[in-house]
Image (cartoon, rainbow, N blue to C red; front, side):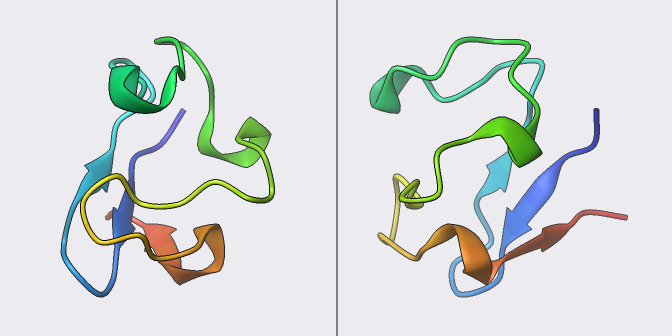
Length: 53
């Protein structure tokens, strides 16, 4: 499970942590997040994230 970075603000979605503020449990891969998922920092949509290398 890879990490994904929000291109507008740089926040990183780490599946080992999830996104507790958005009720996303640890262990959820980015690909399984809802289509309407948004960055908890800047509100950018899921399409604005790219795999972190």
